[in-house]
Image (cartoon, rainbow, N blue to C red):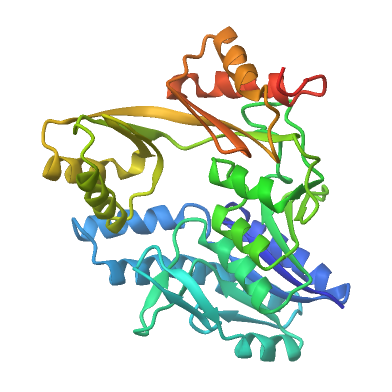
Length: 394
């Protein structure tokens, strides 16, 4: 009898019919003899609606109160799925994050899981019940409800799988696995049957949205086998584990969310740059790339524009330029072939897509392009490196 951690995303729970579908899957797995804990996200667009309500009440929401509000979305899903399971004759118990023993550390809105006290969950499983856990949340050292950032339910599921020493963590989502590119943009993209931890981490970090990057890192750290499957079909999904692709194989192509490119004409003052990045980090701004020369050039998420501009205006008034609307286009592989850089630049030039910057980590090759060229660029790169007839690096 295997212990399986299941996770259902918000699009898999946004209606009563979909909640019943999820419950039926869980019931079938239990009937097959498995023990189950199920982690759930908030239904549909619930988190966005709750954020909207918070903005209606206050111009700047207090962090602890906002976490308390946002955590309620996942609790709705946990309660509804538990009710659906009970209606099907499956004994189940719903848990908020703190009831499940999920202890966090760090600031509200972006806390991280420090430890999990599994006693209550183990008692629930030993009693033959399905444990239904609200994802994305925990309890801080002061006893207050905390949230662990967008994509946090993926992280909750993998963390629970590690803490409970589960045999499998199965992530149900609205796509049937990890593809060589987003199939909505590249219809000929192919689904991977299996993928290694390293390739999965890089694809998640660089924009593939099937699994959150923090969850992928945890899976590798604790060697948790993860399966990505569709909640809408019975198709086989993608297994994530130790076995990856052969060296030099390109695993996939990904597009990031919109980014900002910042150019700071500071004359190369190193001490001031250290201070700048410390302040940005304190404001939760994630710096993606840095070019360190006479002028400082760095990129950040476009969603952080207000924090970036306010900080630059404070320390460097009139000395910076911000270019919005760019996106990072990347290919990922376990040791990319030497010719990949030339091949990527050539295919983008042939497609009429200008490139504004490039970085190579050894396992990921990224270029910055205009947002309006993003889909065309992704299609060109996929044809070059990932179509069945592609010759990598050529």
